Image 1 (cartoon, rainbow, N blue to C red):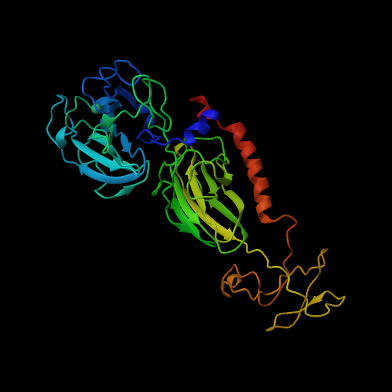
Image 2 (cartoon, rainbow, N blue to C red):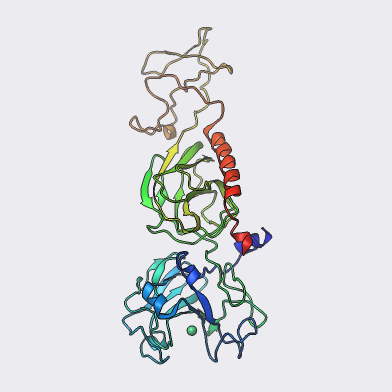
Length: 417
Ligand SMILES: [Zn+2]
């Protein structure tokens, strides 16, 4: 687990740039040339090579289709497509040697290049913002290529020459990968800090969608569970004007999606508030106590690449306001003053001596309008019995129970790598 914590604070959280479905097909074929040797002082390189090459089954793999995705969120700054893509000679024209390619500029100014792509597979355009894991194109053999592979290159406009994303005895730190992995093996999937939000959620809202629709692979770890390498994920911000329990439920699932609530918008792995990480549960649900005005991050995440349609419901329960100051004797019959626009309402007293029917409030922030299901201060009264535990506490109990169950039935992928 110490290893996992170390990855969370990594400054360059690149994910190996493919999808979970295609990941097993890939292998390194040539690292960056660091003075005649590769990053590990070995010979898996060739003179003058400025990037890292990865293969995925040669032309057979190319024809099957090998996805190439963004290693980290950023803005597409160059795309080039249309070049011949079955080059075997290493000197096919087009794209300045890169053939069909995409360049993405990241927040820190570094640029990643994805080169030799399949003809007409480039799926992004100049100026487009892409999240980590966004599909860019397919593996090909365009440009200066002797066979299908991905040439992945990291450039610094500050330094003017390419960087080696791997850290080792023959390469300067840092590693740019979230999980670098072993020599002559692949870096891990999954990006680190940051979430690209898909929008804002509000109380009472339902989202009918899929985690593959606009989903990313930005964050592998939310601090809620020990499970890493999950995605694709959909992420929203959420705020409410009340201090109140908020319940999220995920229904209509056909695969194992998980649900997270985070206390910040950073998605930095350390800010988990609640999660539902049940294996193959339908529904998944969690409840947390929201503070008025605070911004939370809500994540629907596929376990190990799981993809499913879903309905996400956001249910808020406004906290009753404090009882108003007594305006007169309440008597011994349990009668409390009614609202000014209705008759007094008889209601039972609970063992605190307070009426269990919340009185109507004059606080405008609590008045969401008569048509709102959140206006708990029903104008015609009626009894509402307070639960012995608040909803969020039930949610917390549920979460703990689910987490224990999950821990015994799922492999700990992170620890095995
Ligand atoms: Zn290369």
